[in-house]
Image (cartoon, rainbow over all chains, first blue to last red; front, top):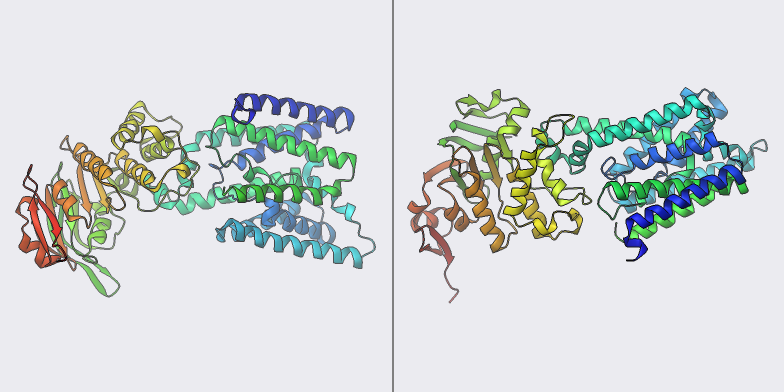
Length: 288
Length: 257
């Protein structure tokens, strides 16, 4: 049996790869273990949130929708011109995600969503280039914490890890407990309303919760995420494929963390879009 | 039992249902027929409670339909869904199981009874080979069968099927015919179908309600439908033959030459 058809063997190999990547990051590249743990938990949270049953209309990652670039710009504006208070950062990120995601979902077609995302990304890049040229006090390195996860340092203690672990467990519990309700919601209003519940209310509630959780994720892992919607879409949603997805996302993040540690964190702003766009075009070609 | 008294419904300026009065017994299969635009789908939507601003009365077991809570109504009345399921990643078995969600208690798993009903529906529509396939991998015909299995899995006391025969091959029509008869077998459940396939409805229904421009023209057993009725209300260029097993009418076109 080929490795690609043997899920157990693939899982084992990926787990070994994950352990190795975490060890390399902690031992060789001196990533603090709290940070490594937070990246793993954030990756798990991100993996849960991008499950097809939890967010069925999520067809492209936040780097492709332009939500990451929009949020980076919003955080940059708040930090530079308003305040560095975390509550304002959270509100700015949440609003960016809500606006861009609402616009993206309204487009329906994946290709259109991606085209709009490219335009948003281009506008944000042009803005930063313009800012870089016009303001000698501004250096691209200022964006590094935003790219690697702005809120990460806030949660870099036992308390933060505990809160995140509880959030992950809570989401895991809720996604399992309400998996059928979420599955029916994913089939559209005609099916969901056979339960007697309001589709509109549920849809908006799930949508807002999703935007809120994406805000938390973006603040924790920044541009290191964005691949969730491209993994495991072609297979039925079950525990084994979920496990593979989670491990793949964790490995991907560990690799990007290693690249940032070896070079400069700002490299991620170029590498992450390239990798996610490559995955986007691969799934697009396969018609997923 | 469903009792309908002087049912009227206006869509904008136009009255589309014009004073329908009739009754439908438990355990009955009733077919609604009529030309396109005669009000068949609107009539079904009124019976489902999806349209609430009507005049007249619809009584379900002597209780006005308007007095049912949304949840009660949806448990009593099942309405086939025309739109395709949106999440093609879902497995067929899970998709059909979702029809039982209104009957599942929160924080509890599906009961053995729910699973049994879904297994029966899968078997009835010969979907067993596809039970673990994702919906996106199914052909249109198989997906249509899955949607019918979803409707039948509700096990509501009144099942409304709107144009269920469209795009079905003859074998699936036969499966649907059997499933409808099995559904009402205990005498407690009712099936009401609205469709344009007159031959199927005459072979399947116990009684036929004929609508024309929102009026109820007749309520008749299929055996009593004759060629004059068909020619008057549908098309003058057809003829009827009788099913040699049950005497029910079948409709045919005249040959071109």
